[in-house]
Length: 131
Image (cartoon, rainbow, N blue to C red; front, side, top):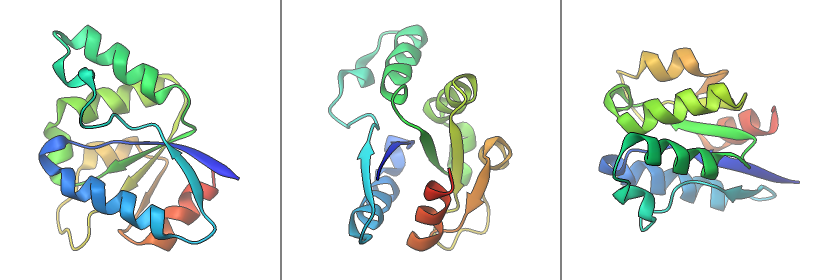
């Protein structure tokens, strides 16, 4: 089975996003399609919030599950706040992932999530398969 995922991120913290993708790619017998917004996508040049929201909605439409890194920075990210709102409006399941070794996490993300997991490949994949 191939899982359709939208992996949220804040480009200021892109290395965490890349590490999460690496974890998922390294998991044996786990296949997924990533509907995230690529770094070189013109969405980043959206001239207003309406265009940004519409572009994110298009990317998220085909995903069955939204993964959000629950670092404290997420609370202040315009992108992530829009992604949470869109995921909720579209009835997408949200999984919050607590960054490795984090002591402080985003309550906004965790409160929006259907499930919160630690930064551990098996926990993340199990949560995805549970939906």
